[in-house]
Image 1: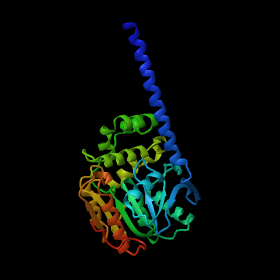
Image 2 (image 1 turned 60 degrees about the vertical axis):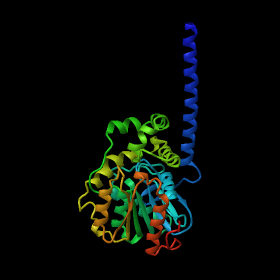
Image 3 (image 1 turned 90 degrees about the vertical axis):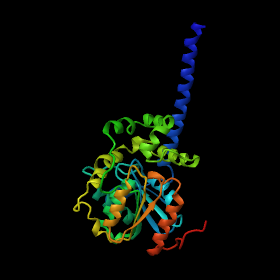
Image 4 (image 1 turned 45 degrees about the vertical axis):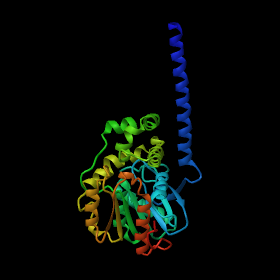
Length: 324
């Protein structure tokens, strides 16, 4: 019996290893198909090549994704929080799929690249929606190109104040290697959902699916590492510690809505509230829960954004809240 034990253990390990390898390869094929498929586009602009996706045919909304994202994350977040009557234009920021990281990159350069993208797509003006870390370049776009911004919506924005920054060893270990990241979110999902996605501890079945979808959408992380590193160690700290010279919020002239969950552990609500006070005429939509992903509140957020845009002249959007 003892003589058979070791071969059985080795056989079991081989079977498990083969199953893990097959699943990893399957998931990576799906991830790469998502960023390389028919919905993925690259346009040559005066600011260099920019990867983007476009959906819908209503009034254009420039959707600016968060950290570790790309155009595909932009589409995902827009689907959760924006009315389908809008036309979504979702670019990849510098260092994300389809958009290379230029030398000496800055948030201001990224804002100018948005203008180049709109020029290439023959879009004169757009609603600008910045999610999380994407708020930095969305704000800069509103400051640097005010004539292009019909309205500004900041969802769970990074804003001046206190906030967490990922230690470099954690980033290097988990966000540079596709297999390590995949294995972590696949096998240890419950341990990383809170710190990485900023969600509350108790989730419904539907909410768990949404968190897994978001975490899985970061694959392949190897295609996002340059942009993610810039966000974590340059863009986000620059906004958390922003001076009036870098981000003169008081000069924003576009109608502005700030959306923030009161229990968000990543983009703190107190920072978002202070940001709304600094932007002239800005409105704050305080969401009572759901963490950074606004879990369980997507419909409320979608309606709140739609009403705000309708009030500011964006055509084709609902005029009031749905009953029930």
